[in-house]
Image 1 (cartoon, protein in one colour):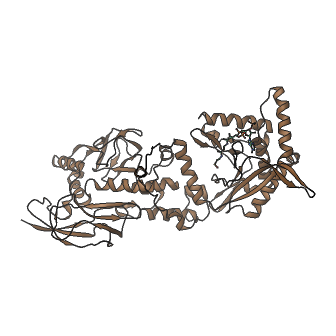
Image 2 (cartoon, rainbow, N blue to C red):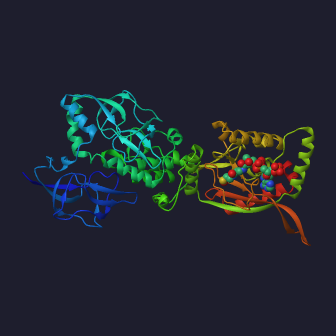
Image 3 (cartoon, rainbow, N blue to C red):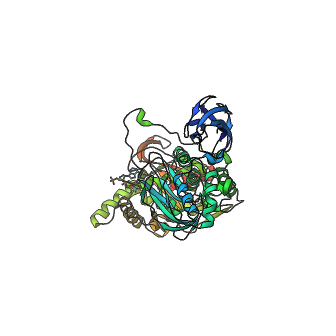
Length: 543
Ligand code: CAO
C-alpha cells in the first residue's frame, strides 16, 4: 500500500536558517534512499541532505535560496510497497550500532560494541581525545572520542546508553570505520527505550560524522593533542567537533559554558556569549586570566578558513606541522586576535657598546671564558626599562593589573622544530656574563629539544632577536599574558648627523610591540628611548 511520506532536514548540528544552494529533485522524479535531495550551505560547511525514503516525489517544498533548519519539510514522497519506513520520521535508516542495540534490546539488554561509523575517506585516524573510562555511565550522543585526520577533527558519539565495560582504544590509537571503540552493557530498561529514540532522533547513518568533518575541516582548527591534553577535556559536555575545536582555539573549558542547544548541546553562540562574559568581567574564567579586558564581539565571529584543493593547480606535498608549531600557532593566533597591539620603532646607537663587547670577548677568549652576546646586554637594558616603567612588567587579570616584582626575561629561540621561548630567571640579579652563559645554554637545549616546561615559564617580558639573521624592523606578537615584547634586528652602520657632519654609527633597530590596553604610545616610546639610551651608553645601567 502506498503512502505519502514527508522528508525533513535531519539534525544538522548547530545550524539553522541554512540556505539551500542546490536542489536535485523535481516533482515526478523517482528517488531512492540516500539520493541527495538538496545541498545546504552554512557559513562553515556545505552538506547534502539525502532522502530517507524510496518512491516518487509528489511535492517539492523548497527551492534554491530557501532557508531551512532541522525539521524543515523538504519534499513529500509517495512510497510504494518497497518503502520500508513505518512512519515518516522513523524512516531514517538505523545506523549499524543502533541496529545492534535493537537486537540487544530484543534480547533484554547485553554487551554492545560501539564502532567507528562511516567517517568518509579516512582510515587509521588517530584518537586525540578520549572521553570515557570503564564504569562510566554513557548515554546516546555522548562523545566517546575525538579523531583527528589531516583534514578534520571529529567526535564519535555513542549510539547506545548503558555502562562502559571495556575501552579498546587510547589516545594515540589509530582507528578506521568499523573499529570497536568501547563495549557497553546496556540495561534492559535503557535498551527497551533506546531503539525508538535512535530511530527517531538519529539522522541517516553517514550524515552526522560527514557533516562534522566538513565543518572541522573548513574551520581548520585541528587541535594538537598536547593542547587538548592541557585543557580540561569537556568530556561530559555535548558539543559538535567544530565547537570543540573553536573552544580549544580560544582556550575555553567547555564544562564552564552554559548550553542552550538541543539536548543540552553547547552551540557556537554559547561559546561566544561565554567569552564575551569573560572579556567584560561578567564571568571569571581561563580566557580572562589569559587576556583580560574587553574584546568586541565581532572579533570572535571568525570566518571559516578557505579550503582549496591545491593539487588542482600543480604538484603538492603535505607535511604535518610539528607539535611545537601547532602549539605556538594556537598561542600566536589567540594573541594576534585578542591583543590590541601596536609596534613602536627606535634606533639605538650601539657603536660604543659593540666595541666594548668585542674588547671583552677578546679578553675573555684569552681567559677561556664564555662569549658575550648582544642578547645578554639587551636583557640587562630591558630589565632596567622594566624597573623604570613597571607597567611593562605586568599582566592583565580581568580588571586588575598584576605588577611583578621579579624580572624574568624570555627570548625567542629558533629551533629546527619551530619557535620556543626559554626564560632566564632573575635577570636583575645576574651579570652580563652569567646572562650570556645561561641564555646560550638554554638556546642549545632548545635546539636539542631538551627544554623542560619550567625552562619556558614565568617570563615577564620577551626579546625576539633576529639580529644574527638580518632584517631592518618587524612587528613581533606579544606573548600573552605578558604585555610587551622587544624585537631586534641586525645592527648596521648608518650616517648620523652629529650637528656638524654625518658620522658613521652602528645602529641597532628596535621594534617594541605593546598591549595598548596597558601601555599607551607615550609610555611605549619612553621605554624605547630609555632602552636606546642605555645601549648607547651602557654605564647608565650601573646607575
Ligand atoms: N646585529 C648584528 N649582529 C648580531 C646581532 C645584531 N642585532 N645579534 C647577533 N648578531 C651576531 C652575533 O654577534 C653573532 O655573530 P658572531 O658569530 O660573529 O659572533 C651572530 O650574529 C649569530 O648570533 P646568534 O643569533 O646565534 O646569537 P644570539 O645570542 O644573538 O641569539 C638566539 C641567540 C637564540 C636569540 C638566536 O639564535 C635565535 O634563535 N634567534 C631567532 C629568534 C627568532 O626567530 N625570533 C623571531 C620570532 S617571531 O617573532
